[in-house]
Image (cartoon, rainbow, N blue to C red):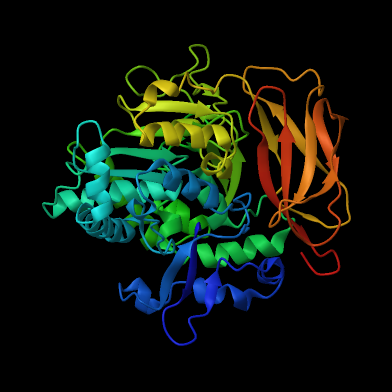
Length: 474
């Protein structure tokens, strides 16, 4: 949901990515008609697109249930543009995230080829070649956050299928929090989070939207994540239908995932993966009567890839591997020899945090020796609700990384900011609650806020929270 969307004809009304935070409140807290234009209609399900079009990358903070808020990409774009020979060398590729990854991958492959041809034919490119030590011709570098990494992989698959030389034209691909193996969060979205009945209204609205979208079904976990007691199973299309999704879209998504995993499938050249760690992240799930129950642990595997089992009981062994709050850490990197950098950050912050942006700049400028070691050791996790009631206190829990302890809140600070302006509007009172460290926060009025937690020696943790109007039903 990181691209703004608008009507393709008529008034070309903006459908997603509006600046006004009051639209978010009305859309998710009662006025379901605001979301209806985003649902895929029968014509679009049949492949006749064009009713909705991308209107650029997200420029303002946004929010959707289960996703912890959506940050704009202005910091990432500035970093990339400042690192290259000329801003004209950068193409910001927005896409209709409602559609399938495969459809958007084909569009990206075409757009990347057009952009490279135009840049190579420009005077700015000729100047840059004269200044470069070896004078070589420009190649592509893809920088992709979240679902964008899946779209990028699909672009290489589409190019290979049509005999294109996209691989040869690409120097490297940088992915930030990309769910290569899917995310349990997608199943929770399609299930409407019925295991947690409050607040019910935003969850139902998101479920009604998501069940029509191929893009959401493409994010379903493709690994063995369903807890069956004595076994771990893959989520089936029938399971998806039972929990509230679309069986046909789930089957299509699984078929595409299998093709991406098959021997001989295209690889991402020079792949560098930035992966969020230390954040509480759903890694597996339990299904009971069509209700999804998130589980914050994954199933361990032996060296042969099979389930590791307890020798005494024969039950699968489990372990909390954490992640970025949305994508489990082992789902965000492809098996193989690509370079992986672990960062103790939330999903959205991977495209905004200063340390992550410094890594991206070093890769773009080919100063990889400046990257330093992986930074995933240590750090704390931030565990917040998606939305709260304005005027009512709630707790922001700080969690130690798996295998570590948080025995003090000395050196930790929590502040509350207006999401659009980043103006500080409050402070969280840190203390001990239920045996752990948490900050007590009261948001002053309905709207979108950014919670920021700073600690000694690590990057700030941030997450967006929507404060609902307590006078309206939730």
